[in-house]
Length: 302
Image (cartoon, rainbow, N blue to C red):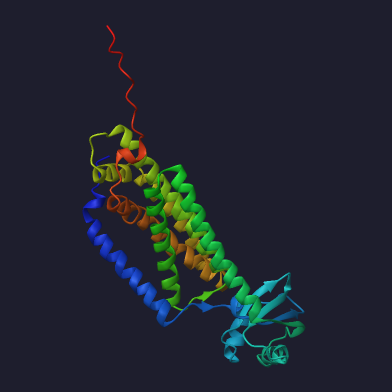
């Protein structure tokens, strides 16, 4: 395969990276994340029907009645639904039931239970999720520093931070609900992007031993080209599976699948144009990977 000059456009890629990162951070500052009930607290309403209920129809009926922020999902049997809504009104369950009954139909809903989840629980989940991401990044940094070399670790961490910032920035811009499923998607993005980056890094390290006279940029171009088919095959197959979830998974999986879709594309890009560029900035050399050979003492006796 002919070597592709990926690093020939690294300055343009860097400008795109800076632009996307700045826009993402600006969206965070201007709009913030649209935290779901898992983080903000709210009311849980369990409904039961005489016959199997249509989740989409129930959601449409609630929106038509003014409950625009209601989250509806199946719960246990096909006749049971769980409605999550912001607010702590003790009469909220009755209001929801009345709205559904007024909507008509021969399958009336009955309220089985109404529970309020306080914001303190949401704050704890949010803090634990943030700590979990920081610990994951710290563990990755330590692993790569021992597995490869500290310059590889810095490149991987910068790449991962870019992926997370861009993904959350897009979710913030479009105000996609950020709940525990989206948090799980962000953690999955970290693992996916790291795996893709390590494949390229491993080939760069191996080529240092084979291409001893090649420059770092030439090494990176050759290594990235050699792993390109594997990267494309993995990314395309993953995106196809995520696209199926995105279009057919329903509203409950929309945020999760959208975050994964964005993260996989960002991870594929960053493994080439961020992680590798950091290696160039840090001036990685073969001496960083191959310990110098100690010269053996020469016996000068006749």
